[in-house]
Length: 316
Image (cartoon, rainbow, N blue to C red; front, side):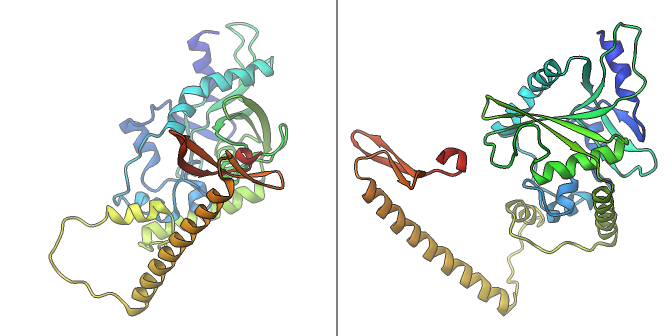
């Protein structure tokens, strides 16, 4: 299929309006995502379910206030690099269907509601001149180091923040099915299907409307324990004034208690690590009833470090 024909496939859905095929990181891409809009990747933060961004940080972003800059990490880099390969695997598994680049969309009536799906799915054209009139479903492509949050292959059991994302995308475009192509641990390929749920979509829309109302009114969300919330607070002050700032006694008590608990937890952890390492002796792993708990690495015949098995997949 020619590039021209593929381009024609990306502009027809029931409810969405195509903004364009925007390159991430460009000015046009940023403009489509900032201001009083909510994108599919942001809606989980609105409802407090995003593992990457807190409601506090998103509020600052939408209010035009400083937020920490995005930093590329290996997981994001390799997810981007592998997206085309995983999408091609899905297409190989589904002859007769074509997954084409989707672009950035807004809802036909709610212009503030935005989405950038990975792919739109169309019936496979039989010739260069056979161009389907409308997409039939969405395809989301994901990579994951472990499968803990993913259910059995073929189910709809996916991480909750991804469910928020695709319910939002389907609501924007007017499509009713999203297929997932997921590569776990670099070799475990799985597929999932999520159907549109109007009740869930309404909950997300209502939450988004309230969130944007709070942004306009200047009602900042409370500070939470997320790391990115702390990083957002760090970038708010501009400069340094040599002055004292009085803070409340209750906050001071919580400060003292938190640091005391942290010191005690650090000492407890060191003791427990010592006991586990002592129990392992010159073995490699500590196990309990078939579960792997920790493992040691060795240099020059002596213990170099002790590591926990951090997931159920590690411990399997």
